[in-house]
Length: 137
Image 1 (cartoon, rainbow, N blue to C red):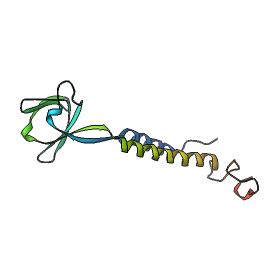
Image 2: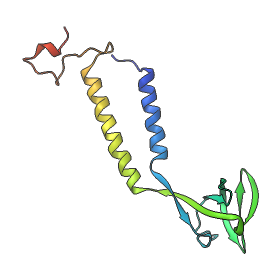
Image 3: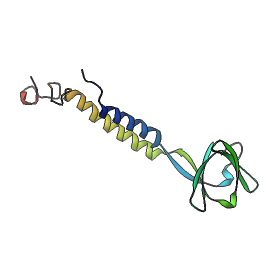
Image 4: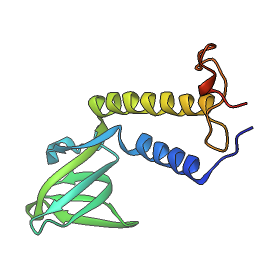
């Protein structure tokens, strides 16, 4: 029976990272889209100096953006905001991830059924019966 290796654990960790990050993208929004009832839960604010930070529970009242920044309630004058972005599901990134993970799963399955723990080819359904050179014995 095969044992888990450091490489296998790394591959699984990278796959989990891809799943959590690759299905979303940040899209520009306007301050008017931050209504109290229909706005996103988090936005990324870019200031004129190109600094960017997350604002949770964002709402616009008057000429200011209100929300939670680093656990502290804050208000930012809209005149200081160069851009607002929200994170949403990205269908094209999700499709690309599905294709990539399918390829990784196919390659991993091929490896599992073809090689033993020493990295040697083993006899299995992938080895032709009349080609004993691909089998170990």
